[in-house]
Image 1 (spheres, rainbow, N blue to C red):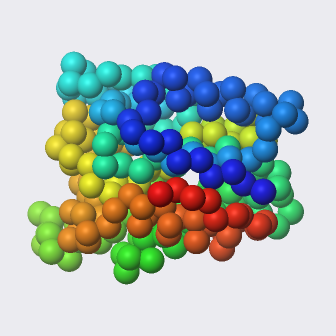
Image 2 (cartoon, rainbow, N blue to C red):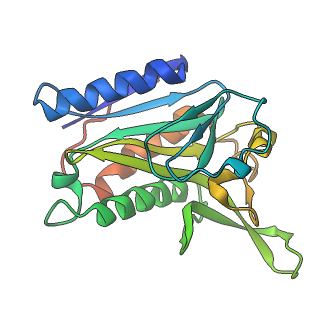
Length: 227
């Protein structure tokens, strides 16, 4: 059973991170079950364990929080759905359990399945973290259509429990990404569902996330009230 928790408003980052750490500790001690939190943060940057100082282009723009998840710099802010996944990787990491790479692929496929609910084709690319969409309406210097990032993925494990998770751009201010080199990738842009011309709301995305979760992760997932 997975508890789906919708956190209203803009969740302050330090307090949310502390609460997530506490929940993971409780899971490891057998005092809490799996949970997925759906929320938004105020504008901020996070620096993963591989973050390069040069990729923080505008250090004074928003607060910067070092975090223990994998990856480099990411942006969080209003209009972006953050999905914190506190899950048992031994139970959900592949058919035999405990396969971390399979678990991460499951997260990627979950995002791709969710985007497909809105007729958006999400794709993964070797050497590029996250989920990408082609932009036939935009061309690069070589004349070929460009690709933009629509979702970021970064997790950490503690005794086979995952935390941190996924960020999907619904309608954030895309100019806020200009203060960093997102995930260290300089040659591609960032997009959102609304930027792609789709009038998708957070409630629409949440419903799609809940509906598609069981396709990649076995087990019964009750449908919560996330209105």
